[in-house]
Length: 73
Image (cartoon, rainbow, N blue to C red; front, side, top):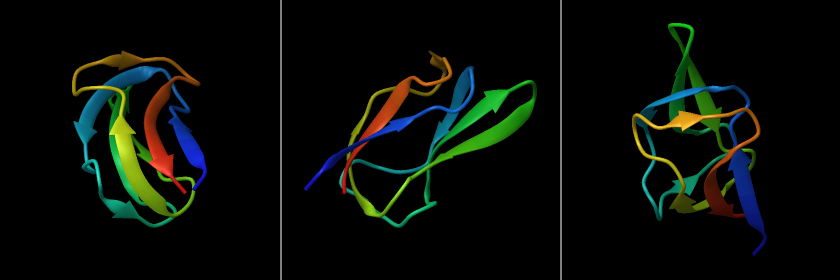
């Protein structure tokens, strides 16, 4: 299986973690919700696979392009 690194598309704060390690995700399933400028922006699975690792915690600040999760695709 190929390792897929999921990245944040914006700079913001981790509002909520919606998925758990070991979850089987479909393409576009929400993994993490970020908050930026009072808006909630989902970080979604780029393809189907299993969530292997979450690299951030709720409340963490993230930057655009930062790896936030790792999946096996």
